[in-house]
Image (cartoon, rainbow, N blue to C red; front, side, top):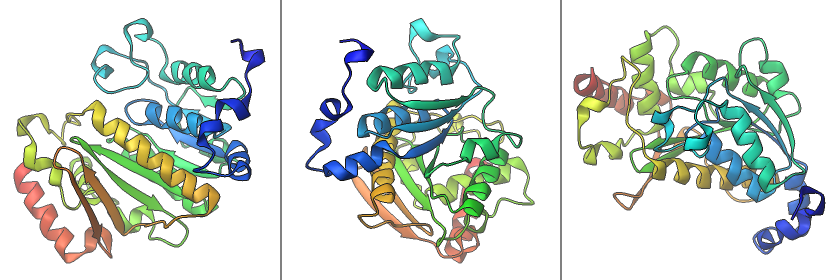
Amino acid sequence: MTASSFDYGTALTRNLGWVTADEQARLRATRVAIAGMGGVGGSHLLTLARLGIGHFHLADFDHFELHNMNRQAGATVSQLGRAKVDVMAEMARDINPELHLTTFPEGVTEGNVDAFLDGVDVYVDGLDFFALDIRQTVFAECRARGIPAVTAAPLGMGTALLVFTSGSPSFEDYFQLDGHPPGEQALRFAMGLAPTSQQFTYLAEAGHVDLPNQRGPSTAMACELCAGVVGTEVLKLVLNRGRIRAVPWVTHFDAYLGRLRKTWRPGGNRNPLQRLLLALARRRFG
């Protein structure tokens, strides 16, 4: 089959039943912005392309390296050294040649965030865990524009889902990062993503979690779980059906433990229980 013989309706026909034909058409007209094409971002893109999303803004400045191989959808021997955003755009177009893609090969920045979010229906966070400054900027811009923002953290062998909407606390209200040094910000971000921290119960070597030096372990299983839950949440947001549990709710599923936990933390990292958990985490991880 060639790109000229591609037919959207036939390619996505097996979605029907879970969505109606009219809903599939709405997904086709939807524009999703994804910042980061690495561990979770690349998997998000491919999952959403197979869902039938027709328009994407994609941002990443990085290139594939050998240490990406354990988890990143576009990391293969043949693609080492290539720009992540180019590789992932090619893979997405190989699923749907009719995709409308706008790429930002310099990554999302203070200078291009307006263009990156222009006309966007949903923002999906695929930024590196430690890219907290630009993450704060993007989430603040989404808030100002009324764009729902979805993030799913790949934690151990599970995923923690957070959704920010116009009616939920803002990113800063929840995580409380401002005014803290980078190491403390990383800790607050980590604990806010997963208040139960259930992934640490099976951590084999704690020394590989090094927040001050921006290092941490990862798995492909977690990235793929993230893509599944984010794809589902995007579907619900776009089609306006199904319950959305926005922050301060966090939904954390751990496949290793076979355990689903939902937490509610009003006040985010200001919550008294959360402050206790942060103190314990500081003792454990410095």
